[in-house]
Each structure stands twice: as C-alpha cells, then as structure tokens.
Image 1 (spheres, rainbow, N blue to C red):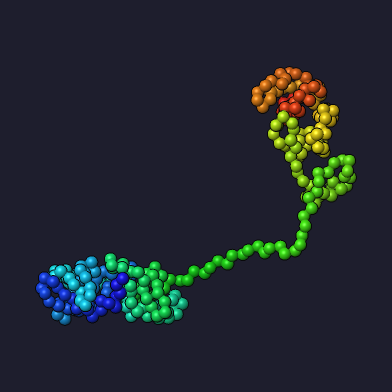
Image 2 (image 1 turned 135 degrees about the vertical axis):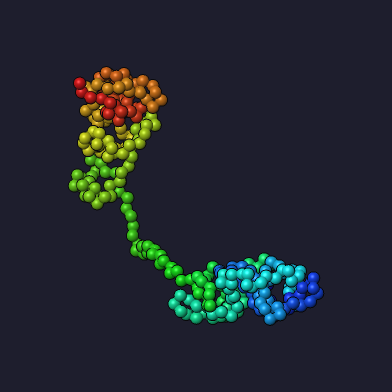
Length: 276
C-alpha cells in the first residue's frame, strides 16, 4: 500500500538517462479523488507531469523508464485535477473536521482511503473536492416504531359452538355482537368440500345451528333440507368422481336428499333445483 506522503520530495530517476531529473512536488487526483493520475515533478524549474501508471518502482527514488514518459503541464487540463494532502475538511454545516494528512493508494493508484486527523474517509464520503474537501450531508436515520409488548396477564377464553339446547337466544345474540362467536367449517361425509355456516344460511335463507357430525342422522338432514322436497333438478347431479346420482328433471325426494348428503352434494342439489 502506497501513501501520497511517501512520494513527496522523492527524486525521480530516469533509467535511460541515468540521472535524477527532478523531485516530486505533489500527487494529482481526478475530480473525485478516486484515482491518482499524475505525479507533479519539478524539472529544471518547470513543472512536468508523470502519469502514475508510468512509475516503474518506488523506493528511495521514483524510477521511470525515460524522460519521454513526462507530459508537459501546458498540455493537460489542470482544472480537472486535484491535490488532497493538507486540505481542510468541512461538513455541510461548516464544521471543521481537520486536515487531510495523506491518501493511501493501491498499486494501481486507486484511492483506498483519505486519512485525516483522527478519522479516515473513502472518496464517496465527499460531495465536492476543491480548495477544501466538502463532506456529503449526513442522512438522518428513520426512527423505527415498535409495538410494545402486552405486559398484562390477559387470558383468552375460546367459546364452544353454541346449540339451541344449551344457549339461550339472548346469549347467542350477545356473543355475535361481541364478535366472539367462532366460525367453524362443517364437513359433510364422503370427503366433500368444507363450507361455512354463513354460506349455508345464505342458501337456506334461515338460521342453521349445527350439531356434531355423528348426530347428523338422515332424519335430521331431511329436517334441514325439507324445503328441497318436490323441487325438480335443472341439471344432472353427479358425484365429484363423475358418477351420476340423478338425472335432469328428477323430482327431489327424501332418498335423493340422503344420497346427496352422503356424497357431499347438498349445495349442488340446492343450487341446481327449482319448483316448476
């Protein structure tokens, strides 16, 4: 790792001429100080520029191939170049952060970091480099709001599904009002799809209170779906596997209701039937 201070005042040795042609005055960077571009060298009282990539080695002297590597300063746009060493560092609010003491460079001349008094910066930390090094505005961190944990000792009571036999109508109404009445899906036998109590009530047009599956006797099913008796099928009624249960035009009887219940097709029986 090279440092800009290691170059300053070093003699420049030309191998082709076997002589010291001058001394390094400064290291010149691009506008963003991301890359060392030239070494400014005093040659016979004039300033010449040595491209950084023409430096063959550096020890007690900077070694170059020949003076042909030098570039006349008059042929270079000096306004696009910057020095860094010794310049003051300021924030956007005018706070003085110290002086840039040196720049650490990779072998390619790319800037590793700019070392200041008690701190170091990458080139991306600066908004502009001119007579001073101006830091970018500091971004304010967004405060994250977290939801506080509930420290109270609260207990949740899950209510059982009410039936007409053990819950009064007033209590059921109170539970619905408090939005605590659980909505449990009801499963019909033979692997039929699940459907909620609300969905079936919309189809039937009246309140339906369910009991346990093992209590759903054929007589109970007929009682829940007696409104279907006498209707006529509008389409063929089939199982989920495609087996025909009843043809279009069949008049719905108790036996058909029980068959549809076994195969989970009560909803289809309801939707696909009407009174002629």
